[in-house]
Amino acid sequence: MTPSQIALVRGSFAKLAPSHESVAARFYENLFDIDPSLRHLFACCDMRAQCAKLVVAIGTIVNALDDLEPILEGIRDLGRRHIRYGVQERHYVSCGKALLETLHECFGPAFEGKLCEAWAAAYAIVSGAMIEAARSPTPKAA
Ligand code: HEM
View 1 (cartoon, rainbow, N blue to C red):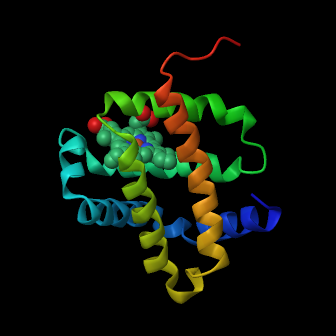
View 2: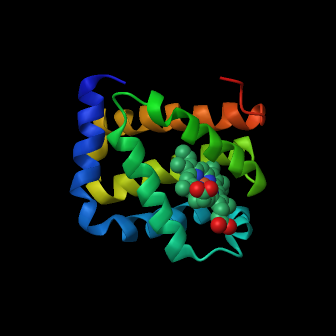
């Protein structure tokens, strides 16, 4: 990602800070509209707690965007845990769509163009690392 893309993601994430958890709730509504079959993966889950966890994870990633290396193993572990949650690779496509759709709702037309591209780039990096780790579930020796 370019420094200006990182700044765009950080700035927009900060703007949403007062409503992070309601935005996360909206994200899950959009996700389940895109693929209703995903709802059952969260059947046993407290969605309020899940929204809070998602916000913390995104915040950690957004803070680290200019050097993901220190949190990369954490991202890979998250990807490996997602196998246990029943998540398949194709679900990451729906998740990415839901993320961009939710941010579009929040920012309106201002989201189109560079801001959308910046978030798509961040999502591609993080989901790519999660998917890659999930494909080879054994952590690589250091
Ligand atoms: C960049 C992409 C994603 C991020 C950052 C993310 C983040 C998280 C986090 C932080 C948790 C809390 C549990 C933990 O830390 O292990 C979690 C749980 C979970 N995620 Fe994701 N996730 C992503 C993609 C997905 C996708 C594509 C799906 C598929 C629908 C999904 C479904 C789930 C489920 C089912 C749980 C467990 C809920 C429960 O029963 O407690 N996630 N995710």
